[in-house]
Image (cartoon, rainbow, N blue to C red; front, side):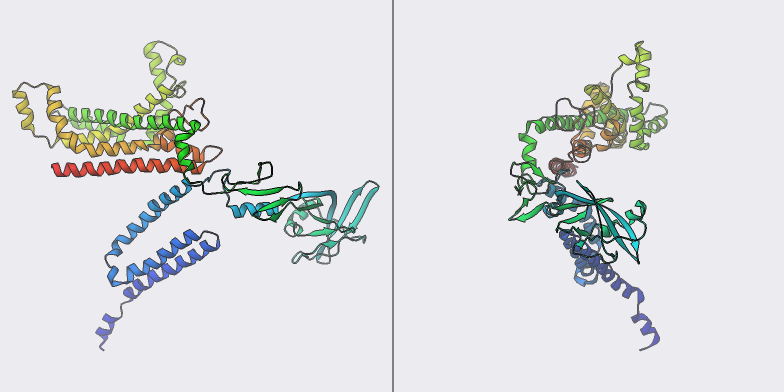
Length: 516
């Protein structure tokens, strides 16, 4: 084989391309093992699937086409499909701030719980002796003090059996408290035995006490040594209960089926604020499309008027709200609408001659708060509609307007019979998309009103300007109960609604394409 043929045969980049997917898969397998060991078998299985598919897609000839689709499909699975599946799963559980742990961890918590088996305890001091440590103890009795001590203890391997206390004295000075604190890890493992056989356990920086495990296994539950009763798991409520039905220990996650979904419609304290918020969400999205669309189309028609001078300047000025980041505009408007110090009420007070206190209470009155939200959202949304309408108007033939002028049609007549029918069908998918966007306009509500003012007379954390998405967020992350299961059920309903709107948008787009 010639030198040239050898050079063509040995291609380092090609070999590196083969090795790269294999190395990545090996790293993913390591991650999968770590996830499995940490108690996440589902995530570990998902990582194994990715590790197996990666070299298959990029090394097999038959999967050549999938090389270009694989990154996008993987990103879709990670950032869209996985959160969706997890949210739906959580909606069928009682996962909340009161039910965070698994039942195995709650059992571990109960098995580690202790109680005072008697009032016997000893105070102790720690002494450093011969490279190890020794304890001197003092027990207060009705007749005085009893001083005892332990033998030398190696902190590297503390005894697992109880250390019998004797009357032998301990030499050396006792360590100060700051040095005792550093020895807590091995002190917690010690057990001290009194001459009569009572075993004492670590009970703080100053003493060992007669404490013992409170719960011992009994069937699927436990026997309470302190009361003599039983503790059993209540799967329906996700808690352990005693004989009186009272909760014992923290709650655990459990499967509740359709309970969270049924609460949306059957529990009055949850149904009423949800229905009010749903009605406001639909109204807000509809009015936002109507107002921003109306203002945008009107300004687009004005800017399309050929006799208007300085149209380029006006167009630039009117697009400025679209150029400023939304969160900055929202925060500015929040200050402007401040009832006591905002510029809006100052201006209204100047124009009406009435004090600022008599002006609209934009943050505490529900209707004024909704009006404020609509004003700000119209300001943020009209530039987009204006740009779209301006582009659509370029497709309308000027000969149609000339014919209308000959027929004596007025401005409104030409708008109703020529302009609107010409631009509305192409804009319809955009209007549906705008409705879906405003249906979940979290940023506006969260920054402007935070959902307030609060709804009076409701048990949940609900506000008069809350949208479904902000209501869900507040239930999950702002309410003290942190009811993730109920919030996930609402999120699943929102997904169905928005998914239906997306499907409707697709059908309208297809119909518009066929009409064209």
